[in-house]
Length: 211
Length: 211
Image: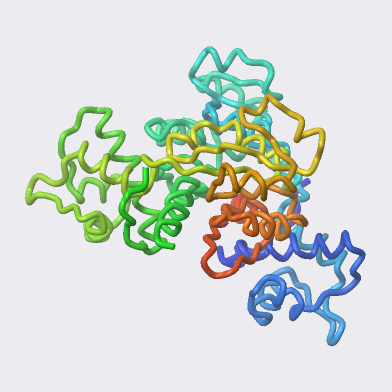
């Protein structure tokens, strides 16, 4: 499943590329054959020259006056973003949000395969109805030896976030996807990505109050 | 429940304030009485002067040599961020992720009360096991008249994102929390926040491949 490594991309490019893919997938479903960067630009309110620059990272160039072939562009984007490969992950903390993510099989369409959950609560670790086994966090070292994953989705309570991340990294996890509001610190060489849903809530509340 | 409107804050400040709150909540649980901006700074790797500036938006100033009172700061932060008020929301699109968010009662601890779901699939709209009623999207106009909510959580398929958002806004929704990979456009005066989980996945994959 391993592809040749793509270049390290700037974060803003990695934020925009999935927008292009979502839009181009819609065009593909509609049977559209070609799309120009001007057309993408209008649909998504992103500068056309920015789009051309972002897509040049994929080694793709549009044809003059025709643009990009829709199917080829969609396939190239999905592969380039890693959505067509298989990335194994575990969920650390199977409370409310953790269980929700375990059940969200939509993530699988984007290449994420959650194969295990971890928790400290015996009422949770005994559950067999969540689609994957839920282990005690202490077992992560053994399980990572025989059945390793690279990505840990961090959904423990904030006060346990740093410790859980440290344990996971000690057991060989190389990337932490942090959904907790705690700002977890990791050593260099460990990938750390924050999905700050509570900060987004605060943003919504603040902007609503100001309307 | 309505508080006096807080000032419109810069997004980076709104991103950092929940970090402070998460950290200070931990200190409170540990029985710590005072915390200095230097201490917060060390724990979270945020510049101490930045912290003092962010907290000044709340009208809070630390005491010289003592710092901030932990309980008062935690309460002030939670209230200021809107987490102690009640914000009613609906979920548009009760597929995998939508159902997951309906079940995540952790959001309630941050002031978000999801009171309804909407879908177009009769197999979903007839369900009674999701904690809230799931209506057909066409019913949103009537329901918003009698039982309005301000926030719509957008978890429909990407190709339905713009239309669903337009319908919701037409029915009186004032804020869209977009979890789809589609870049939804809204008129001025409508709050739009993107939680780009697929972009975050792409970021993780890209950085892992580069390690």
